[in-house]
Image (cartoon, rainbow, N blue to C red):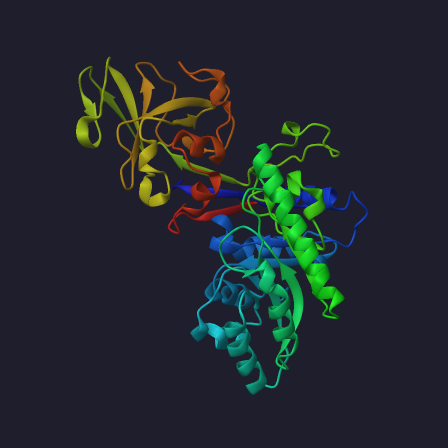
Length: 395
């Protein structure tokens, strides 16, 4: 078995259904879900995730997909995805023809881009759907709150454009820090007031959406007409309900969807005092056995993790030793071992039955625990699993 990423589709669907159940609890069975599949669905495979979302859910009309680039959206269309696709990032003006050709719905932050899109749509004699993007505190794309009304009026006056949605994005909705909670609540309030101002002016704001994963978990007042949970659907909770007193809902359960597997391709006997891998950063303190695993930083196993992680073999966690190389890494099996050549080796995911010389805290062996070891987030880990690693879909 070569190194491969196992994608558990059944877990993804359970995560999706858990989110669906959560957002329906306050009396909104028609609330929609935008599934971000940008960055190849956070490394999980955009087309496969999109197809599974549509094939294994009841109300497919309540689902749309979110991408970051025109190419990502175009690939979904080529893969047979006909559901609405939102462009969540600002595209280049030269990409407008491709945006229209692929029927992607852009978020509009300014009248200049709206005007260029309108001219192209008029030339093709169509009314093209767009969403207004309002910056309520994220500081990235989106028009300032005080300019939103003017932008809405401008777009409403464009014969080639149709406002079908209005959106914002939160900066710290996954935090339970009091200042961050208050900041998120202020963003929600500013957004709601702005949307109501647009509506009061006789302009339909379309589908109103704001909630990312953190807001789906912690801020029910932000759910509006649609939510956009990303990492939550792929199995990682950026926040915990238990950290907020008197939270009205049961905690969401999320199951990691990706498992990175490899194999033991060689076992070498190493003598006490011998070194392993580049730079001689690890030297054996006793005679031992070293397993060679064909997975390295070019596959998405971070070099910064060198000497800080364990690999699961036969249900036990063995320490990775020496520097992680581009294509390989080394694991210390100890002086006596029942591990055999060609055994499966789980880099993250799976379960641990026992850890030689390691405390039970390592039982969390998913991408979140791996990320914590090097001070990053699980998004980065799953997104960085290389394209040369085949995705195997199960469930």
